[in-house]
Length: 568
Image (cartoon, rainbow, N blue to C red; front, side, top):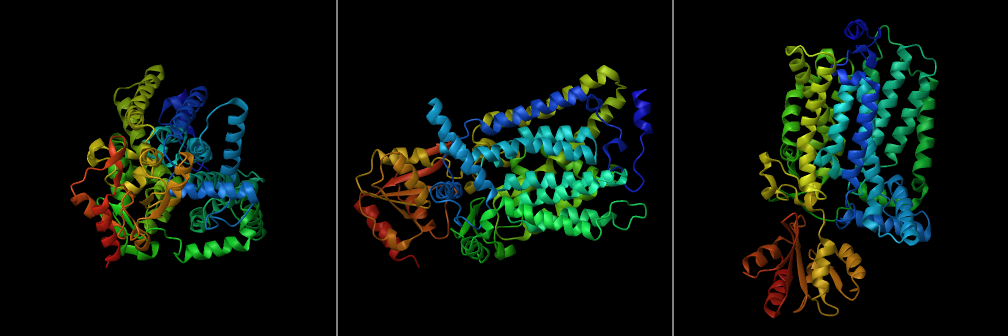
């Protein structure tokens, strides 16, 4: 009887299945509401556990340090334009989180680190991205796709790694998915003659305002806009945003944007945005990718970081079964039988891959917005395979549910094992195609290490450096923060890329060579020290060298000064 009911369901007249009821569920277990609820709760629990496990164990990255300084500015002086090139929303949440962490520590004697408190809002929002993936895909293709993709997001190492960095990209993804969900729900409601469907569309406008208050990505509005336009001239289409509806949509969006991003009203914010858009905020001149240095500027286009960057990332940073399923599922997702939801995914993919392939400035965290596409395609292949096998074996009822549950567990086993193996340094995960653990940190060292061993490095030189010694590194502000925590505020931090400062170094000073912090401006020092035959002290992340610590004697100091003076 259940099979008959599923086969009789019809799609709405204007669309090829925009309602989830238009599709028979390929996984029987997705028909059981109780199973779905329990599965989602387990998914959220797993995602939260992975994302918050030892959340403060890794040192802050340089960009995260900028966020912490902004939080301090807000708390001491109120809202300001500091770090104004980025919107307010995430920094506001971080201010609340850091303040709450301090209150909990003082009230209960706990030891929540600032690193963990700063990252917690991102980890929490990243956890609930699984829920939004489920809801959106359930609306587009049915619960089966939503369940599998949501579970993969919860446990895949790179998805977890993205959500443990105090940067805006995870918030962008969350509010992008919320925008798309409400937008598609407005379409579904309109096609079913629900007169209140515009409220969902206006809700999508509010969600997009939150996206813009997280990161200035106005081009992403083209995704729901293009999707809407695809149905605009369909004869039976009832989903129309004519006249005043568009006006209300943008007014509501604009007002919500001001609420979520109040610092946009400050002149200082606009000054910082102007500097950033003019590429005057670029702190370093290059990016190391697979052992080579490349100019890392958006405007460098194909002369910058190679166009292959994100495709290599997919190949070496995705759990192997998920990668294989992605390659199989990619053509499956865009078949006509997938319904109109495939158009939304196609537009989403185009609006991310087209610009980010050719822009010259790249970081792996930018891939956060595209990662769900990989998992959705993998889910499509998995569901097709499981359905095919179950059909061949003529499985029905409890036997089919048991089989499907076992297959889901098998699918998730590998990414779970990978995440457990690399926790809490999830970004270091490298699959066997990329060379496995021995190659960890060699493809995208800046993003893989992300200054994770700074605290431990300070612990070494703080115990050995003379009073007032100079430390040459690429993140002076970050090292000052940890040196002060270690009681060594006397140490003087300089940039290794500043030849004038380096030219004044002397015996007893220290040079730090940080994995992922090699640039055109400092590579000569690294080459010289590597060839000097001197064995440095080291700090590591998962057994891979993170920072090399060189204590200068008279001869080394003289040579370093010579390199600084004769830099050309």
